[in-house]
Length: 439
Image 1 (tube, rainbow, N blue to C red):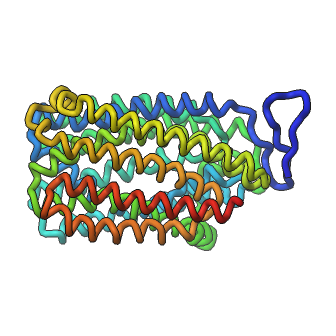
Image 2 (image 1 turned 30 degrees about the horizontal axis):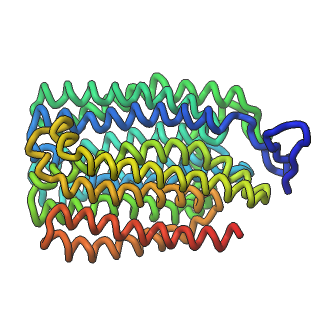
Image 3 (image 1 turned 45 degrees about the horizontal axis):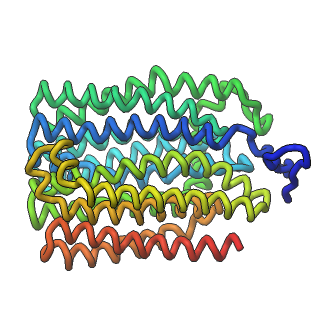
């Protein structure tokens, strides 16, 4: 149970057997570190679309978006959301070696699957090469992600933030050079892969070694040197994989939900319209970045509150997350209504401003997405793992039907409507599940 001191304004949770005491690191400090890192990184990722739109064509933007839509669900499933599982592993049920070993194994499988799909999918040679290059880049990024999970578990969000502050601009520079020298999106994706490899080797691995030396062992079973070696015993990896598998399905379905409108737009309307839609949809990332920063900072503490049976503190913190998501969504909608045409013209090109109505409805969908994302962090902190694939599968099925009906009739506007309706249902179901568990 929990207790609080009478002399401090900040509640302090008592230590439970098998648990670390809840860190006194300021949640506000972690949030601002994470926000800074995510904003710079997301801004750089958005800059990728700007570079492609300025140096290339809407068709190139569409090709890049299609490559991501194909590769992301596979990579996200292979990730098994191990970072979130590790960050909320308040009882240290699995050592870091298990997370690292499983990530290595599943990433290799993901690369093989992406290569097979790109070859067997009947795509043009350039598209095939692009899918494989994006798959390689995303696979490299997953290793930084699993190292972030260890940092996040110890609430060292500053380490993650500094890495992302380097990764974002480095990615943008490498991609710009790649597309400038080759004149193709394949060169752009190759630049991303190179940039992420350099950052992983010279920065993230070094920080992880220092972190493992700083923090004491949860158990005495492993030396410090062994903790950074991937575990290869399949029995140990199988146990963790089975636990995280539902989250892997959930992550894949989330990526699929992002990709479904893009698949339909590319098939029904073509790569040019997909380029318009992808450029506008990426502006949703501005808000998602803030929500991710707050959610990643809060999720370890949410998990510790729940493990300590402090349900009041858990609900209050989650309510603050959701309220912030609502405010952020309203701000995006107002910005789109007041200056959507000007925003699209300045950020991209004048032809993108013909899609202002779609942009407004995408911001509506974004607002609901922020709320759903906050509730998703609550589900994971409650260790409600097995239910999440069912929630996202239902969302994907609904979105599939809505896209099939609305996109042929209403174009990109129909895609925005479909996304908003589907994610609204997802948010309502997530809320009902959390309410039942945390009451």
